[in-house]
Length: 187
Image (cartoon, rainbow, N blue to C red; front, side, top):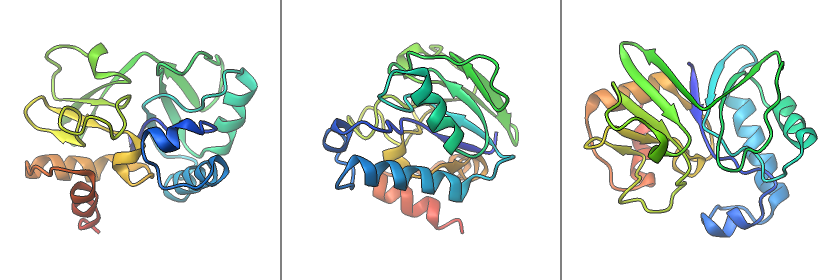
């Protein structure tokens, strides 16, 4: 798995206010999120997408957005993902997903409440966005959880190798700004 990201909520105008996203319109949000995804991810990259892609419920809407995004996608079903499309060449829909990167095990679910009580390694999740930062920060070393919601990742996919480097340092950062700058320092 090369990249991680969750909760784009494309076409969702209320998410801008709900999560205090820095966009003036849904159009600007959609364009920025897709552009940052495609600037970061190449067509052959493996992406773990943590759920809640679009607020629109139709299969056509979901397919339209998936066709816009680069990468081979493992798509964790979120609470807003009512449509599952079978037989897509580069997208696989799952309830949960486990993988290892450089010896670090990960277990991924959309909502951390649906994860195992004692996962081997780190639990990756979205769902909580940038709300409740004390309970669901970017990284919580005590619970071994990583919140991969887009708001905590500066609205762009996070390289899994960068996350592994960050986790092995064992540092704690109280807010997304500090975490974002720390990840950026790896360049």
